[in-house]
Image (cartoon, rainbow, N blue to C red):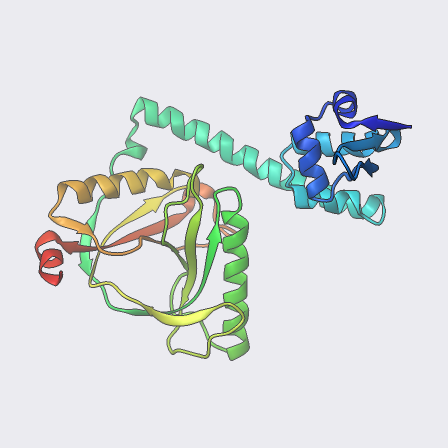
Length: 276
């Protein structure tokens, strides 16, 4: 017996729009589609698959991973995928808990969130191996991790040693409403042939406004706010893409012990006008 999409929608508690999306993504194909009207029909036996999808979406599992769960070769393989997502959710919960503590500090105006000390220093060009990518706020952590892995593999194959701490260059603003371009970079002493998605090039700036943020990455926005406010009140203007330089390893220190240097390439307004 075939069930019209509208009725099936009410049975499985998924909207018609969602059912169409899941069909287009290969998660839940209609049992039959009328060639003349394009109307879709389902079977009662598909309700279990629909329920699995509904539950996994309710815990924010990405559609591509849901498809992997549905197509898994057995319970063990599906369980491994679910375990990875569970760990991701637990990590997200820890971040949210830290952000709530940070928010309380922000509201109370505690000393730990007072403006950062900002200085302007001369900068020399830095040779880096970099991977540039388009990313979004909900995937940037995974994308950046993969980018660093790709560069380290390339450096390792050349038997080179990094010449400085890893950094992330923001070519665009990445937030809840905007995705864009970033570049993960690792300084190297000498150039080597680019390949497999990474490129060696010079990261240039004449001067940078810089500060160091102490604490979790999730609280870096306070350093950005301090930096932008300082630039707005100074004689300087932005002259390039901001950089985050990771001075220690989050795998070996606690979130509160993390040290992240921010560098904003700047030029005096007079110098910028003269260069036009």
